[in-house]
Image 1 (cartoon, rainbow, N blue to C red):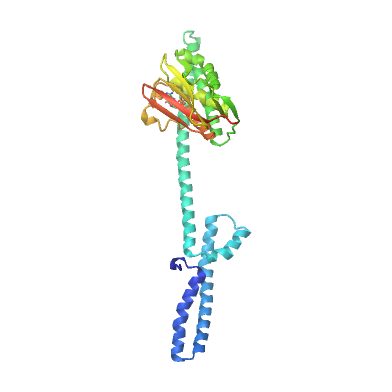
Image 2 (cartoon, rainbow, N blue to C red):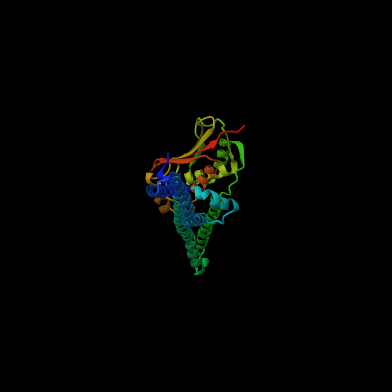
Length: 349
Ligand code: ADP
């Protein structure tokens, strides 16, 4: 259909020329009723005004539009784009141009929103980071000052203060390691070295490496009954070890004295294995569950009991699991316990 809204410059010029030529030719016929004179004047007026209008439209309107295109694309026009401006652009209707500009405006708006979000994220990150740094640094400062002011010579407290200083230094080192890890992950520098391995074997290795810590709380670590059948996953073993260490370490930190930590692994379909780490500890309030994987996010309980680490552990886990194109999730109830689960790709032949 001939849509009045979508006139190209040629159509617009032709229509205007026609509107001009018809009444003038009829006027000439009225005063000088010779058909070929009328036809000739119609043709001359039509072609003349068509050419003039087209020239004007292209010169004044499309030159401005070309400028707009140059501005919105920001880059210098290449030979191909020059060809486009000269030959294709004039065929575009004003409506096409409006659509292009609208599309450009939407893209810019999205970019601005992304920049704003990044800015807010950056501010929050700096705020969190300075808070995380301040706590151990002030503690170290306090212990060192007290030691220098005389406590060093007091055998009853000097070792205690030094070991507290050392613990806070460990905290700073852990924070630096986690920050290093997360920045690498967020810069997308994670290259996966995927192999086939039995997930239960890796879980047992991690249980062994954390056994001393678990013993301090008389916590029992084990694989759930019925989940002993070896399941082979295809993943980056060292990265998954890190995920398991973070989750089991959390289960110990937030677990109850004499509690139990159980790991389970299930085949959920031919392609995926679900791994779960459950504890019967403090639990996480429902209001925190959505945010628990965010960097530096901690529940008030963890903060008030000062048992948290850098607050980056779960964010690191999420990055690693998502880099495997898999998912991680949490289920929890206060005072009942928590279960973290993640999926992995099943053995690759
Ligand atoms: P953190 O280093 O503080 O443990 P994480 O990112 O590992 O940081 O965990 C974030 C927060 O999630 C913790 O501070 C704690 O509030 C909560 N959390 C994680 N795991 C558990 C768990 N097994 N039981 C209860 N709360 C947990």
